[in-house]
Image 1 (cartoon, rainbow, N blue to C red):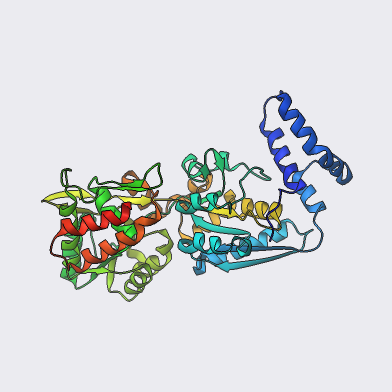
Image 2: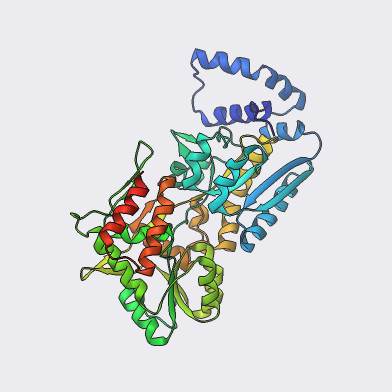
Amino acid sequence: MKKKIVSLILVSAVMTSMLCGCGSTDTPATEEVSQTETTQQETQETQETGSTDAIANLIAATEGPVDLTVWCSETEAYQKAVAELVEDFKAEYSDVEFNITIGAESEANCKDDVLADVEAAADLFVFPDDQLLELVNAGALQSVDATFTYDPHKTNAGTTVEAASVDGTLYAYPLTASNGYFLFYDKNALTEEDVSSWDNLLAAAEEQGKTVGMEVSGAWYLYGFFAGAGLDMYLGDDGKNICNWNAEDTKYAGADVAEAITEICKNPAMVNCVNEDAQAFALNGEMIADVNGTWATNAFEEAYGDGYAAVKLPTFSVNGEQVQMGSFAGYKFVGVNAYSDNTGWAMLLAEFLTNETSQTKIGVATGEGPANTVAASSAEIASAPALAALAEQAEYADLQRVGDNYWSPAATLGEALVEGNYTDAQTLLDEAVEGITQ
């Protein structure tokens, strides 16, 4: 693929969007000149097609089959839902022949795989919000300068639009607002009091010979303990991480939080495990609670049956006090590759996959919460236990904005805390913070 100036069709869509969205016909002289020069050929094409409709122009200007590739989550639910929506898209625009390929792409690795070879990457791809800035800086994303069927600014929650924007420019289409974590549990085995704190939760599980899971060694989840205790970890304006997990003069010293985490992991009922293993343990009846996210909804719903439930994260004990765990919060977007050979069609498909109907369908299929405000408030979505738990945890969640240097040192710290193979927590934290902030 070759990066090119946006086609006349896309320019037409931009002009249509500008005209439809403006309540006044007053235009500065400089803009009038620019628009006159830009639209001379567009006007001729519009007359030839006999239509001012941007989609009609796009169809009329299309010769031969349109090839598009979509990357989305490798999970069966996502793949199936997106495949069905792609067929709906083809039916909607049946005058055009499409060759649309759906690829399985881990959202966690999306940015790296796109930037490895942007020109060979998919025309559209689903990615989490923390990858946006690097994709924008690399010139990999087509900015959303034109709209065909709806305005993302008006239909989605304001926080999702803000998170999808850089310096006021929208670079991706909001899809979900549920990229966070909370506690799944079996209410036939655990009471609400049991799941209110790690102390109660592990005691109840141990008494029943069952287990509780969390990827404590995962940097994403480990953040929740330190954030809950009021310690900082975020990306500074200079692009470097700011972290005080090794603080000694805060209300809860970093070393005390570290030792509290190790105490949790020492409990025989506690299992440090990744998402896939936790789901397997729940399905075989061994694990009765797990810290996870909406992507795991289907597995835990199947595992716990009529006992399926979800709630905010538990509190944990630091120096004899109960501290509410924090968490990361985030969103998922659909991005359009700036190097796509079919920019207009890629943007129209991105709109289709993220409209109200599609977000509802994806939400029902995957258990993830829509960014679209109407879809999010629908009965199908609002009644989901996982989304209710996520909303409850939102009060204690922070938008994920960290630099790349965070992940490896934090994961190493998590592994050490899980294993408990350290002699001095302060030294361990000093080393971790040095790596995170370098």
